[in-house]
Every structure is written in C-alpha cells, then in structure tokens.
Length: 365
Image (tube, helix red, strand yellow):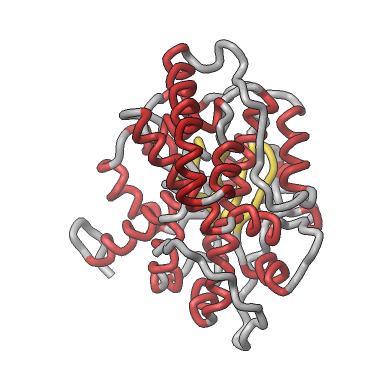
C-alpha cells in the first residue's frame, strides 16, 4: 500500500500510533520542560522498597491510597506551592457539596489525593487556572468511585490474595504491568502491545470487558507507583513506559476501536504519570507514522517519545535499565516467575469462562 501524506494508509497508521502514545502518556506533556527529567540522578533504595511493596505484594484492600502530605522544602517553587495550597483549600471547601451530591466515597477518595505532589500533577495538567485543575480533580475522583478503581486494583493485582477466573484470565491475556526500576531508580512499566490478541478479545465480549478493567487497574498501578515513589524520595517523579511492538501485525490496525477506547481512559483521570515513552521493536509502519505526525506535535511531546527499531531497541533499553531489572523478552536476565507483567497469551477459540463484569456507570467510549 502507498505510504504518503493524505493516503488512507498514513491516516490509519497515524491514528493508531497517536492512540497508542496517548493511552500511556497519562495526560498532557508538562507545561514546565524541567519536569521532563525531574529525577536525573540515582535516588537510592527508598523508592525501590515502596515500589516492591506496592507492586509485588498483595494490596490490603480497595481503600484509597494516601501518601505523605508535604513536599520537602525547595522541591516545589513558591509559585507552585502557592497553587497547591490554593487547590487544596478549594477541594476542602467543596467536600461538603460533593458529599451531598455524590456520597461519602467521593469525599474519601478526594481526601486521599490531597498531598502536595498529587495535587501538583493536576495543576501541571491544567496549567491555565486552579479552577480548571479543581474541575479535573473533581471529575477524576467521581470517575474513580463510579469505575470502582480501588476494587479493580485489588482484584486484578498480580499478587492478589484471591485468584478467581477474572484474575487468572487477566494474567494470561492482558499485556501490561510493572517492570521494575530504571538506572536512576524511577519505576518503569511495559505494555506488550505487539503481542496483545486484540482480535481474540474482540470475539469475546466478557473478556474484552475484563481487558478494559485490567487496563484501568494497570493505570492505577502506574499512578499509585509515582505517588508512593515521589513521597518516598521527596521529589516529583514520574515513570517510564515501554511499549513493545514485537509481534505487531495488521490485526492491531483492524481493531483500532479498542485502542481508541483505551486511549481515552488515562488523560482525564491519571495526570502526569509518565515522563518518557519508549516504543521498542517498532515496525517500519510505526516509524513512518511517527515521521508524519511528530512535526505536528509540540517539541516537548516529541522529546518525550523515542521510537526504536528492532535493531536499535536493545541498546536504548540497556542505556536506561540494567538487564537484571529486565524481563527476558526485553533482553534481560530476570526469571519469568518473578515477572509482574501480564503474559499477553493468544486468546483460545473457545469462550473463556468468566463471570459477568460489574456494571460501569461512566462510559469510556
């Protein structure tokens, strides 16, 4: 097929790539370019310890996560800290109305997300005004309750205490998860998009619903990881996301609707979770699509994304992450039994026996 500006092939590939990237960027690129590499030097073991507890141990329950309230002096500028305090006071003033309109669960969710660094994420994502950040915060907290984010995080956690049919299927057929830490100590996550059997998921409605649930749990793991990491190391930190395209086929393109639906979940609800996106083992069509759309993106967005062919992927990954921290499918030495990344297996032709998902009151399509 021809590949050039204006062709159907280009528009399709560009649309797929845009959906892929935005699904993991978790919000707009920072208004402040300095946040792109907020942790450039190794931060020690404190961050690794809290990440291992969060991602490698069974969660205690579905309750909202609270972290240390105050950022260390000097980490946020005076202007940033003033905006955080302003937003926190507006949240506090709104709680009574939110309780009356939405119930106690929204109040509990909101209160758990009022630490300095978390509020700063909403302000960075909505830099024009504190009022816009408050609106985003309010809608995100309501969505979290409606979507049952804490329940999904607990149910589908890799180390969940109770492993039912949904948990087992998510571990088999979902394609993402916590990878470990980079050389500077920040968390990194992997999405094996090339191996994801989107066609198999599309054939089975209950399994597809479960995959959307698993993606919500995945995004929540990312968001909780950067929150606990920032609190532990005393710096505004974000994660690195690796999108592995090994196994990518035109079946992915035929199910672009799934990618588009997934891509809408993160930006309004999980702000400022990632600082870098590595697209590795990228086929030629992905590289070509990026060459088409990247000139239309802000310089900061371009800097956030790296597209690597199968020939260059390993050297780029090795520069960022030690091989002892990498799974075998990314060239690492970590045994498969220690992996927390879902296996992205092919979906069988027979129907996967699953209970019906709980109804979702907010539409993500």
